[in-house]
Structures are given as C-alpha cells and as structure tokens.
Length: 565
Image (cartoon, rainbow, N blue to C red):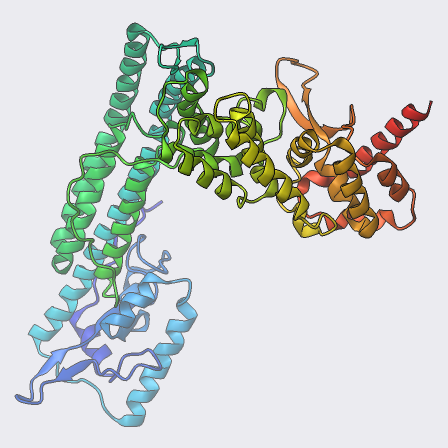
C-alpha cells in the first residue's frame, strides 16, 4: 500500500494562467472584489486574490481526501478567492463544504463569460508570486495549527498538575483548622489561646508542598518548551502578528510560573492562579489565531500591569468571618477593663443580622443570635452615657425584629445589676415600646424572623408578663388566621439530629415542639388548626424552613392533649 502523501504537488504555471483566464472576481457570490486591484495613479495592477483548494492540498488542510495528485492540482479543484474569503473558507470547512465551493466555481466561470472580463496575460513573475502564496499559506496554516495543539496540551496539563500541590495544601490547612476549632484557654487580657502546629509538623507540610510544586514544574517544562518552539515558527511564518506572539509567549511563561508557586495566605481550597494563567493563555492564542487569519476587531494584548507585591485577598466564607469577629469580641465579655471599641460594636450589629439566620442549636450557641447580641452589649459596657443611649436608640431600628429585640434584651442584661442600671431601664422601655408598636396580625411583621422567632417574645414576656405576650399573639391570630403558619414555625425550637451510622456527626437540624413557652397562645392556635381551609396555608410562607409545619401542628395538638389528660 502506498504511503499517505504529506502534500499534493502545487498547480502548474499553465493551470494558474488557466484559472485567472476564466475568472474576474472573488468566487464568493456576494463579494465584488476583483482578483487584481488597479492603482489609479499608475494603472499598475496588484494581486488581490489567492488560490483555494476545494479538496485540501494536505491531510492537515480543510476538506482533504485521498485522491489522484494530478486531479488535486487541476483547475477543477482550484478556486480563486480574495484573501478574506480564502481565510474564512479554510477556517470553517464545515460551513463551506466541497459542494458549496463547487457551486461558487461554476458561478465564477458563468460570470466571467457574462461580463467578458478575465485576467489574461499573466507574466511568469506573477505566476511565481501566486504559486509562492500557495506554499506560504500551507506553511502558515500548519505552523499555527501545531501551536494551537501545543498550547491546548500545556493548558490541560497545567490544570491536571495542580491537583498534587492542591491536595498537600488542603491537608495542611485542614490540620491547622482542626487545631483552631476550640480555644485551650485565654490570656490575662481575655483573648482566646489556641493550640498550634509544631514547627516540625509545619516544616513537613512545607517540604511536601515544595516537592509537589517541583514535580508539577518538571512535568510541564517540556510542554512549555514545545509551545515556545511552535511559537517561534509562527513568528517566522506570520511576521504581521508579532504583538500577539509576544502576548502568547508571556502567557506560556506565566503558566509555568503559576504552577511552581503557591500563595500560602490564600484560600487553599480556592486557589485559582493556575486556572487564571491557563485561561489567559487560551485567550492569547485565540486572538493570535484570529489576527493571523486577518479577522477584524481582534482583541489586542493587554497593557502590562504594575507589579503588586502583596498577595491576592481571597473571598472568605461568611461563617468563618463571623466566628473570627466573635472571637475578637469575646475578651470584652471576660474582663471589665477593656475600653469601648466603636468599630467592633458596629461590626457586631451587622453580624447580628447574619446570626438571625443561624438556628439556635446546641452546637451553634456560641455563634447564634443571642451570643452575638450579648457580645455587642459587652463591647459597649464601657462606652460613655451619650454613646450607650445612641446605641440603644439605633438597636431599636435594626431589622429583622428578632435582632432588635435581642440587642435590646442583651443590653438590659448587661447593665441591670451594675451601677449603670439606668441604661437597663432605658433598654427595657425601648424593648416594650417596640413590641407594642408592631402589628402582629400582618405577615410583613414576621419577615426575617422565622429562624429565631422565640427571640421576639421571650424577653418581652420576661419584662412584662407571659399573659401579656400570649394575649397579644392570640388576638393577632384571631384577626388574621393566615399568620398561623408563621407563628407555629417561628416559635418552634431547633433540635440536632445525628447520623445513625456515626452518632458523632450531625446529620440535620429540625424544628420541634418538645416543650411550650408559657407566652405561646396554645388555645387560640389549636382552635384555628381545627378550622377548615387550613390545608391551603402552606404555600403562603415562602421561606424553605416551613417544610415541617404539619408536623409541628401535630406536635402542638399532642401537647394540648397532654395538658388535658
């Protein structure tokens, strides 16, 4: 069997003259560009076209099939196009298959006959120029194709090679986090003291990470060298795209640099520098290919950025930030000598809004709404009179209401048995007024309170009476039975459920009515639960935490029956 040809031979000079002698314009039906452009001042003509193969000239070319070499270079397999359409036709062979180009060729010949115009009398120098352009385009296309393949290989390999260092870094960080899950004590200023990895253990992780990075670099170096070699060939074959070649060369080098470094102070689970470098390389070579194809509006290389010494700041987990903020505030609850920190108090007011979304389970007691509000009160205990009064007034305006109630209640607890108990009296007054001013029959009043609803009513019941809160809620329910689901869901407690296969692990948290606060309007609620039409209420609470309403209703009915028995 004969070996597959690397490339079919070029057309003969006679074939080139035959082609131009039977065509006038670019074969693309809507293109009006002549095959030669005339210079008005001199009357000279400049070549404005190229020879396109209908069936490709080489196996790497578009629309290639194995065929007789003489047939491949015959006039019947050749088409004259302007440069732009030649590039487009060869770049998108699936859009321009053989059948389309053959129709174009037929139309080109028919137009030539109709207008009785063609480009005859080509000189030997013109024929040589046309033939050299065929070879040049073939070399150019192959060089660019090899570069694109080399870059794609490097890009995919760099992403895969990052998995090794990522695994080491993740293990290092997980070990550090495990050491910080609980403080081992606190110092004389009330600051938490945590255990830390020993220098020996830290060094072991550091050496393992360095080894993984070195292995990644060594694996990628041959691919980087290969890409640079192919890029050098493109520089020679495409002298007009040197700027894009520079961009691609820089991007190739940046992939290797990113692969052999690790930002130790970044979020180790979300390290993105290699992915970013790989994406930039893909962007650079894509625009290089477009520029080489003569496309318009090609994106230019980016402006060089000034060197920045500091590392990128990663996006942080809001719960990690919340915990760290509370840890920062805890010394104020342990000692009485710390000065008021206005900035920290402001941050805790905002953090309390996040805490309103945290279920008050046993494992969340240290970070929940009551804990956050309590720390806010501790931070403010040494503020001056004007500042404390300003904080009380501001806390009353915070929403959702469970946050305002908790902040005022914790301020009351902070000052009630101190020499500054008048602040507790002020917080008590504002809290009672806040409760009394709300329309509890309106569903809007309950917005944002479903997770920590008990925080709305417990403090008010303590400062006024259980009966006062119970009657207020019962009257609201009579006025608008549609709030029953909001009431039932928000006033339940939270319970952790552990995994049956591993009791040390929490599987989920659920709402329950294991007990019932005295301020809860049980009689009115049970009465409303027994009325027809309740089944349509479930859709009225949009928050996903209402999923257990029917179960909670059953629990309330059971509690009611238990009281009667």
